Length: 265
Image (cartoon, rainbow, N blue to C red; front, side, top):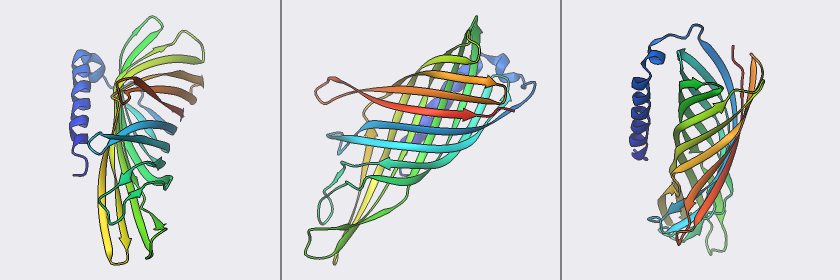
């Protein structure tokens, strides 16, 4: 398996949600009075600090996703969602030294396919405040990109392909005291990891190197607004901050943004 860590992360998320269900048995045992089906559209962008070469070197993974899917409430208080889509991922800055000729990845953005699933559990409403927990797991497989090598005596080329996985889970608090829109805040465990493979061919020389990468931070703070002008349409706008330690120990911050549209019926 290319990324065995994702099994542990998914198991941890499932265990956390199971604990929540045990603490809130009524919501887990009641069937929703009317199952809600919500088609979704999701546009997401983030730039994340990543570490590689045994966490001794650093660069940035920038990714943009456009996804479509559906969210279903099948038990009262529980909602599950599934998404598929396309993404653009930029791994520029990685250096591959175990090839016939060392290469720095400056290929820019590369397209890929992405898919994922989410799980939400409504915990309680206290006055105008809603409390829930939610988790989401996304995986991306990038398309292969071929580029020529220049500055060599013989013609050559490199093939590059990258993939990543992203797990996020945590509580969200939403204020429902306004009509039509609702601000919310969240704090999450947040982890991204993946790998990039580069194959090089120059004349009779060939080589391949796979470079694992991992995000430098483990948390996310988010906030945004839900706008629900009617019962058949809604928009969600969210900004996320990802703290991480810079080299030397000083704090660094990455940022992300997402726009979601949902159509309940």
